[in-house]
Image 1 (cartoon, rainbow, N blue to C red):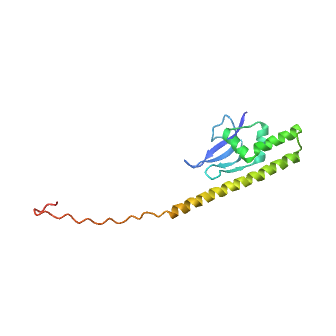
Image 2: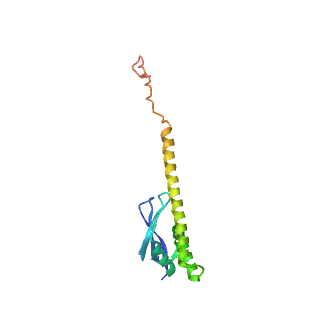
Image 3: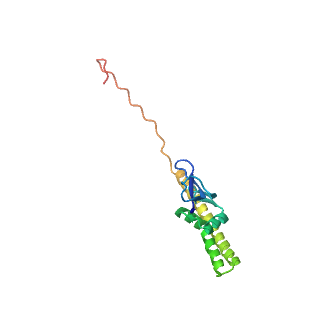
Length: 158
């Protein structure tokens, strides 16, 4: 059985929300799955990703292949980097404490980067609101009533 780590779509039309799941490669996209690893919401800025790193790492070590989008998500959350470091430990390039130290350093820098992106998005939204409220709106003026057409001497209208 070939296992894949992929996205399972939920949410309404034009409002996607995804579960990150491990599923048999033959099962349909939104069908039966083996285990749920987390969620992915692409509508927030930056996208909100909740992922169980340990479970994802276990499935990668078992041979599950991620789809392209899930590979990017796993890379973003550091799962692929952690797998890379643990392989270096297995090969004897460095010990496990050094690997965990590298990962925690990377993780702290990454979290700081995410916070800066979130703050930048919030600042941009506030700036747009300030610009929108500073622009004077055109108030619709009531139209001046045109004089009523005068009746003809013959009783008809003009």
